[in-house]
Image 1 (tube, rainbow, N blue to C red):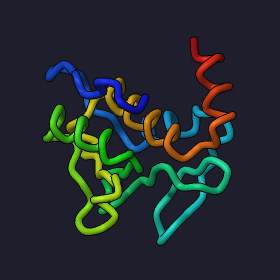
Image 2 (tube, helix red, strand yellow):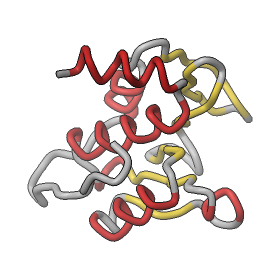
Image 3 (cartoon, helix red, strand yellow):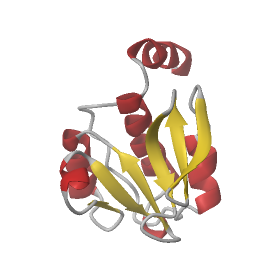
Image 4 (tube, rainbow, N blue to C red):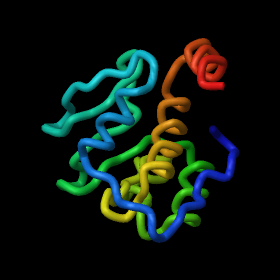
Amino acid sequence: MPGANHAVTSPTAMAVTAKDFRRIALSFPESEERAHMEHPDFRVRNKIFATLGYPDDGWGMVKLSPKDQMQFVEGESKAFEPVKGAWGRQGATIVRLNAVNKGTLRRALTAAWTNRAPRRLVQQFGSTAD
C-alpha cells in the first residue's frame, strides 16, 4: 500500500513469467485485461494500472505513485526502473520479469491497482484481504 516499505526480497527467489504477471494482475477486484498500443493492459474501472510486454517481452509496467516508485526502484534496482520522460516522473515504472519475485511483483501490482481503483473498491478489497 502507498507509503509502506514495498521492496524487500530474497535474492534467491524465483523470477516471474508473463503468465504470473497476468494471473496476479487479474486477481484484484474488477480487474480486466484489454489491449493498449498492441500490448495487454490491465484495468480497474477502465483505468490502466499495468501493462505487459512493454517495452518488450520480458517486461511489464506498473503505474505507481512517485513515492511508491522511488521505494521500489531504490529497493530493487535490478527489477524496477522509471519509464523515461514525463510518464516516468508521474510514477510509470517498468518491471524486469526475470529480476523480480512473485511477492515483490504482487506488492507492486497491489500498489498500482490501489492507485487507480476507486476509493470504495480499495476499502472493500482491504477489508476482504485481511
